[in-house]
Image 1 (cartoon, rainbow, N blue to C red):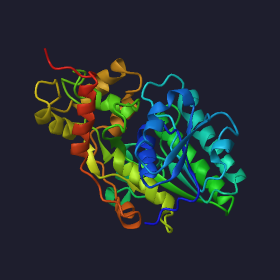
Image 2 (cartoon, rainbow, N blue to C red; image 1 turned 30 degrees about the vertical axis):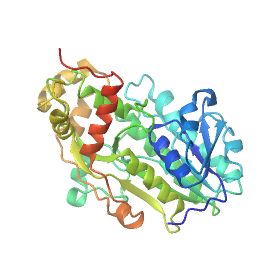
Image 3 (cartoon, one colour; image 1 turned 60 degrees about the vertical axis):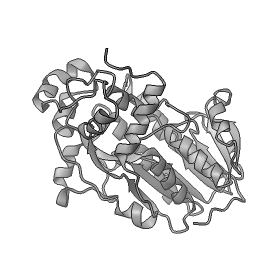
Image 4 (cartoon, one colour; image 1 turned 90 degrees about the vertical axis):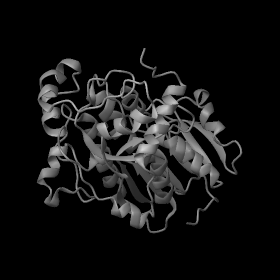
Amino acid sequence: MQIATDKPVLVTGATGYVAGWLVKRLLEAGLTVHAAVRDPDRAGAVVALGEGTPGTVRLFKADLLDEGSYDAAMAGCGVVFHTASPFVTVIRDAQRDLVDPALKGTRNVLGSANRTASVERVVLTSSIAAVFGDQADLQDIPGGVLSEIYWNTTSNLTHQPYSYSKTLAEGAAWEMANAQDRWRLVVINPGLVVGPGVSGVGRSESFGMIRQLGNGKMKSGVPAYEIGMVDVRDVAEAHLRAGFLPDAEGRHMVFEAPYSFLDLAKVLKPAFPGYPIPERELPKALLWLVGPLLSRQITRKLVSRAFGYPWRGDNGKSRRELGLTYRPVGAATVEMFAQLVEAGLVGRRP
């Protein structure tokens, strides 16, 4: 793969979990990276990624909800990697916390792309959540196997609002891309992302999920939840290839294989003896009964439609057209948990 280094590239949300590995990979390829962040004074870790690489980092202040704030960062760039988007599990106002930043932010960034003549390609970080809403939805798909042709039609502001926000944002991106003919949109739809942070433990909710497997909160058992999962470094590589492979186009489901939370726990248990890592799945009926009492995000509709179902998807397009080969998720989870241990965020059983 030839990577042209004559123009800088823009990475939005450059302090993010996936973005960090992407920035590192771009710098190693010798590119000048325009790193758009909300607070440049707190982005020292991004600048540090450039040390010892042939690339260069330039910081720019920008905000998803501030129209036009990406214009300066995008000036002269050939490829735009739009990775910035909220991923939170504690939601107080779904419209404010999820939908507005995702949808308005995407329109804001792509509006800048429309105004920037140098931009030839935009790579959007979407999600597998834009492909389907609930695991139960797979029962209505011929063969029960997801692919890029499907769209989430069942999520809304009150049920799976994160998935709803990703669906709206990607839909808006395709609408804007199809309304012009200068730049090409390529979309990455990763599954649940795991693996180490490029600079240690990050603020991604993925770390919070893995932390709960070892801090005792799930000692009695984990939900019977299965989904396609992927190493964060493979997601970054997918973005890089989507940005520079000449024929890259369309959507790409990016995941190694389906895993359950119990699968991850079984990998962590022997690697970290002495930690309260769960050994069983909780009965669905119990989750249906007590879930809403534990968290308002665990609704009975969510338990009914998302837990206890097998998950199947086809990652063939990402392998064929992006040339991806996937790292094992189990090993990535062990690396991630080790970072949490080193940071003192999970402790041994007394």
